[in-house]
Image (cartoon, rainbow, N blue to C red; front, side, top):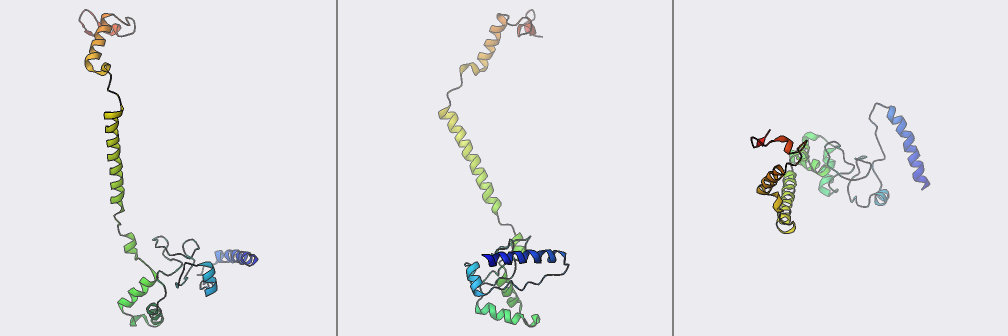
Length: 189
């Protein structure tokens, strides 16, 4: 535990000097020995740790805004290792297929593949429309089987009869309904 604390303190002191530097920092502690790899990254497998990564963990993630994952995408196979040895020489001697194989060993997707539309909007639209349809069927069910029938006082005929009755009784002669009705002409003022 104290060794880890000392390493953390040393990293903090390096950070302040690196923050003032304008040149690229070359890190020699990126490559881990097998004991450290087994202790820190049990799910890493036979893949190379090549950098700090998105958030400092040794995980692979394709992100447009952070193009440098911490580990390579594929494990080190004999074919990939042979290509990496060949890559150390002249790149003009590599064929296009070998360059693509090297890229695919380090990365899962290209930028064009990351930016390509996925069609996810279709499932979202289907879910929204399904929810709206379900809501509509619930409303129809509630109106048909749950709610009681509308009272007879809601009909237009009842309201007209009620209005005539109120006018015949002269309800509200000062400020009410009768004050707005002209009884001589038989219409509202």
